[in-house]
Image (cartoon, rainbow, N blue to C red; front, side):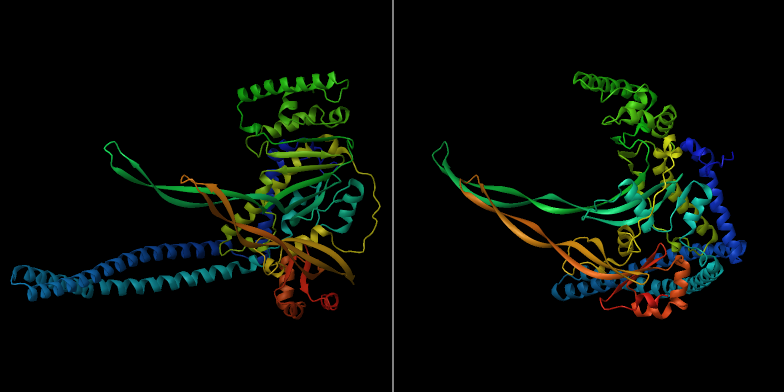
Length: 609
């Protein structure tokens, strides 16, 4: 099946689930294999020679494992024989002592004979059998290990030209090649941010308790989106408990007039509830589109794909009753703010029952949109109904369960291997997972034809004094060693927030504030009555979390190289001297270099010209 390339393949995207299953999934895998083949050809790699080397290496590793198994068995036997010798020595000593201390000579003689026999057997077996076996096996182990190490080194040498060609840009290039309508940015630049912010209202309120760990931006059929992963800090409560055990005695007279004393014990427990910071990550896709700007709604995942047809029918029947009650209540209030859709299965399974504009809701969710979304929600082969969707005017939010496990980090080192087959598998696995996760986060939006057909009006870029968005700078500092920024006394994770300070040529100087918490051990005493009739103080240890922060300064500059090319320049190229100056206190991603600097450093921009 060949897609209609009109509007960048947009016609195919009108049915996104079918498009992925029949075309995009297969085409992406084909493109990945073709890309890998091109890299092999460019590297001049002899794949069959590498496979032979790897096969020989694995054979040696298998032989080595067998030998090491035998060696381990012989060592255990050696230990047993040593134990036998020690036992014999002990028996001899006991026999001698018994002979001295007793007139009975039979038992000491038996012990002495048994001890000598044990020592002789252990010593003879160890010397005649185990020691030679151990020495022979250790020689074989060293021989096979040397061969295995040599073969592994040879395999790595064969793969070095290919490993050196991997780079972080390949994933986005493959996606662009597969889905022309899906354009991914190299980084979240200020133009893209200004477009999303000025036109759609994105990012007007920055959460001080959130820091960006990953970010991907681009546009689909001309409409912009950003997918970010954030570290979120929220305050909650923690219940702490403590306990003591009390003892007391009571006396009473029994039926015969005797005084009886009884001992009692009781464990008293108490608890206190105290504030505590909690951390979690959240991955969300935010999509801007001018269609239906007055509509707001939300829906939550219900995993309809897990239901049988009968269970789904029961769910729809039950849900339809609730919808009709809601509609009757809305009509009874004298308005028509909520009305039932003609497709009850869609209305129940999609579940956007808090919608506030019926006209615009129907404008978006045409019969084709309903068909697409029902297919997506009930598809057991894919991710199914695992996404939350929120429409807030021109902004649409998708928060899916599968995106929580999406590895967004494009890193060439993940493909490096001594084996061409293992490298290909890593290359295919990562890129297919990356594409699949991103595609199915976009799929609910692509299922709405008006979104793919609605072209945004032209927007005039307002300009900015800074080179990089806050999202990109947060991603950059989170991509560095966290100990560079964390407060010295912090006991929790740090939320890194960035503030633009000024611009030095083509570089941005940015202040990084790390917000975390110190942990202080405390004890509260809670009074509880005991069974002894007294009030007792129960100590309850708890942790007091006190906010603490630290600020550092970084400078960022767009280098524009892939991670492969930058690494080459930093190790042996034009940036070698500069990187020696800044040591390891840097991060590189999305073509942007971020370095920890002193406030007085004014040579950064010129250093990396």
